[in-house]
Length: 284
Ligand code: URA
Image (cartoon, protein in one colour):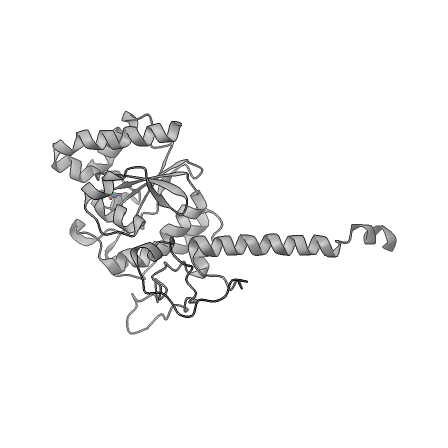
C-alpha cells in the first residue's frame, strides 16, 4: 500500500466524531442502568446535592445518582467488609471489576470465592445460576438452601422440584429459562438473608441481569420481589400489580416462592394465575 492508499482509509473528522458520540451514548446508557461505575462526564448540569434515598431512586427510577462510588475499603480488621454497596442516593454500586465482566463465565470467575459478607465463611459453594444465558425469562429466587449449597446449583431441592413443575405447567423447561437468586451463598439454617448480605450481592445480580438482558423476570417470594423492585410490601400488594412492575425496562412478574407453596397449598391457585399471566405476556 502506498502512503496515498493508506490516506484514503484514514477516518475523517466526522467519522471520529460519530464514533466518540456513539461510545459516549453507550457509556451514559450503561451508567443509567447500572450505576456510576465509569467516569463518564455528562452535559447535564450536576445535581446540587445527592437526593435522599427513596424506594424509587434506590432502583434507578428517579434522578441519576451524581455521587461517584468510592473504592472498596478492604478493612483488614473486618475481612467481610467489601466496601460500600450503594451510593449516597441509594443506587446499587456495581464494582468496576464486576462491571467489566463481559459474559457469565467471566462474572462467575469474579465472584467465586467472594468473602465480602459473612455468608462466605459458611457456604460450601457459590450458587451462581443455571440455564440459558440467552433466555427471555430470568427466574429469581431468594437464596440457596442446603441442597443448592451442596451442589452449587439453584433450586435443586424440594422447592426446586416444585419450581420445575410450576414452570412446566406453563410450558417452560428449566433449560429454557435462567435461574438465579438474590444472594449467591446459603444463609445458615435457611434463615432469610440479612439486609447487608442482600446489599453486598446486588452488584453481582445487577451485572448478571445485564449480561442476560431478558425481557421478562419472574421473582419468587417477598424478599426477592422487594429487593428487585426496591419496595417493602406484602405479597398481596406485590402480586396486585402483576406484570405491571418494571426493572430497568424489563417486565417483572411476582409470584409465591415454591417453599411457601409447599407450606400453604391454598396459595397454589393464585400462583397458577400469576404464571398464566406471565405466559400470556411472554407469548404476546
Ligand atoms: N430457595 C431459593 O430461593 N433458591 C434456591 O436456590 C433454593 C431454594
